[in-house]
Image (cartoon, rainbow, N blue to C red; front, side, top):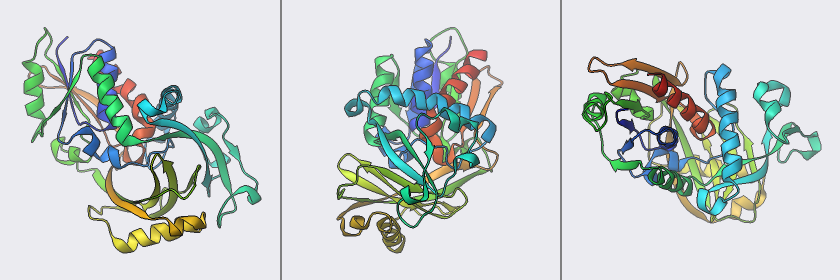
Length: 326
């Protein structure tokens, strides 16, 4: 088997590289940024299918990932994964897909149980991932399997294909394109679009559960996630907005919305602001394979929108299957 080069060092690229290494492949990850500096590091990151298509495949990918996170939560300090209780407001069980029946403990709340200015909601104990910690753990897991992460920016996938095709082994090699929003130019794929997410990090005033009120079609969302050393407040879902600088007015509105649910948040000291661009694709996640003229297998694996963490392991299995199928 030839070498595999995974282009992209976020959560999708790293989990895919791990699954391939577990199957005996020699794997290198090329990442423009350190893993802690990728878009994935900005994520909240609560397990929940949000702003991702196609619906008929998302449920299976999400549940496969959920099972992995449940196992990783046994060692939260190392993996960054914890199982935390919380509430999805403005959500009804009947409006979700079949996958919801397989989420342990997911239940509809009575109106008086829903916090803040909301009348309906669901309660669940779900994986909440401290992404800076988790990304470092993923890199270490890959390295323990013999893979490695290299800082390298590519201007075209042909560069990776050439390296994979000339690498050690008897095969022609494989390239897996996990470049997220950069696939817009590297694939190229005109269907890729940015959905801007802005967050505010504050000192945690004692909040030990998460909360979301996030309509997938809305430009403004309300959520808070208790992470070690901070409370993450959100957020926004601004389509085709690629501003990376935090907007002060947006930050103030985020804090105000979260404080309507937990008033003590209004007095919390702000630690930092974060902005990330969700890599959304109009046609949904792209998971396809093609054989290049030089014999290299190119697998496209991008377009996970706001749910890269949620589907990472399920999609990684699917991408590894495409590589095995050749």
